[in-house]
Length: 172
Image 1 (spheres, rainbow, N blue to C red):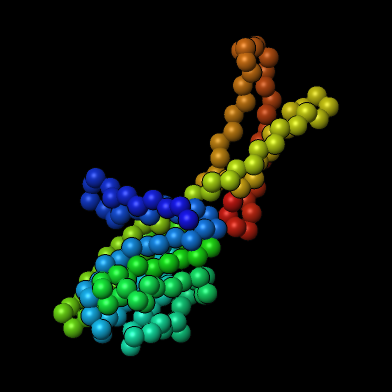
Image 2: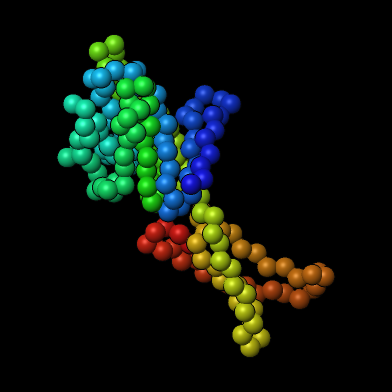
């Protein structure tokens, strides 16, 4: 599992960078208590319930379909102040802003995290077909930019129509 957590220098949410199809931890500190309530929400396109915990157990009845079977908390660590969320099989659609709301008898707090998804495996293929060179790739995110050049430079005009297709998983 590879992920990066950064805090921007300016005011803003900390960012967690996770790898596509890997597991990812979104950090959240909560007040230690035996009566802790935790609600994780994905805020990017509305407020979608990611994971809820209260009465000392997971409460997944309102969980958004996108997250079903892919979330968990570190239950043995909640009483020590760890309300972090484990998100498995990270998807491009998971990218965005999350909130972690926690409440105990001492009060409540809400923190925010930005999740950024990266793809680490890029496959590029270059083929010569008749008098054309075809370059194709898979597993790219975000959308790539493609430009052609020759070395050494030439006055020859390069005619290079490009096509970009997006998969169901939102990769290019």
